[in-house]
Length: 201
Image (cartoon, rainbow, N blue to C red; front, top):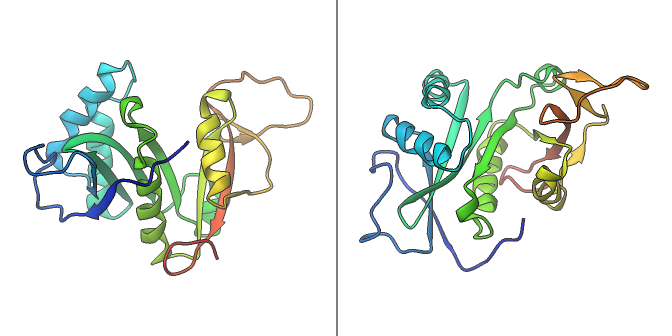
């Protein structure tokens, strides 16, 4: 994913309104904050508009998990418009990460109309900094089809390396000689060492 360097990054308090109007936010300002109740319907509607199946119930569950401390959901806005999000799952559902107490970055999405503007980089930067305050390592999973090509390149450029367990399908390791369906459930997991500032260790 190519990124530009001409945006201003700012983390704002969650007390501010979900999507700040263009009249008071520069068109090239990226704002990152935690998910709020008022975000749920606009986010679900934004994905429905492009044909992605991400219902409001998904974000209601995320919000509940955030309130209980199981997950953090970082929302990005550009020029006052919702642009994307990433979540931090503090106890990964991927058993090797869970056993090693490695938080996982999960469900990373930037709307197509907002890509190549630095938003994905800013979301990853903020997520890694938050994880680094609690863990020296962060993990992430990525699909293996060409649809995930930009994400694969981005993670490699950021210093993520394969965890050495090979391909997984629907959460299980792919065994030599086994036939599987190549779809979104075929993935590989990666890890990255973090410093206290969230950079590569």
